[in-house]
Image (cartoon, rainbow over all chains, first blue to last red; front, side):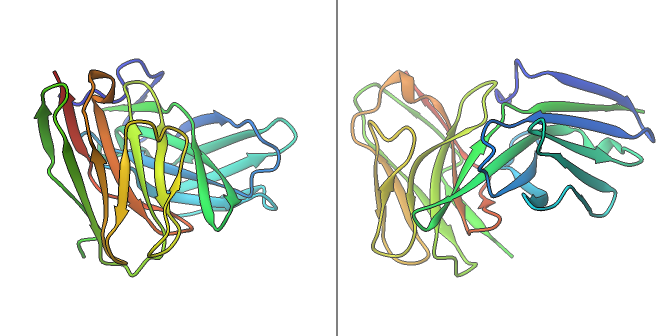
Length: 114
Length: 109
């Protein structure tokens, strides 16, 4: 089976509820932030990003909030569905030497129950 | 739309064996990356290539070599595999954001 995420914190929600996944980042100089979703046996899949000069960005059923004062990022998923069950990673981006240096958080497992 | 394709998907090696992991992308990206992912952790960068013909070390390069064969392909080589290199390896390409393949699950006995 998939070994990724064995010891991750888990958020359990009921189908149809809203989910909030939180992330603390380390460097106030990071240029922007990304949320990735990783399903079992798959690679990380881009969900939404936000630049450091913004505090909120909305996508389809997802909203990312950035609080630079406390270096905190959150991902809100509206009307959570069973297909949302996955491990969610935040990543902070520092542009360095012509490439994007991705610093990943440890991840949170979202379990959606019918 | 294939995106980023990695081969093989699974591999078991004995300590000391060598192996090359292959990665190809069809999105015409300049930048490509190799990461490893260990249980309970996020991804850590092994090597990256900002453009064809260039490669640089990431966070955990020891025990690995890479080749940027052309714009599409970026391979990762383990010259003498060690049990500590048991992991899931991901290739990615792109800039903002990076796009990932589905990984190679590598076990070293």
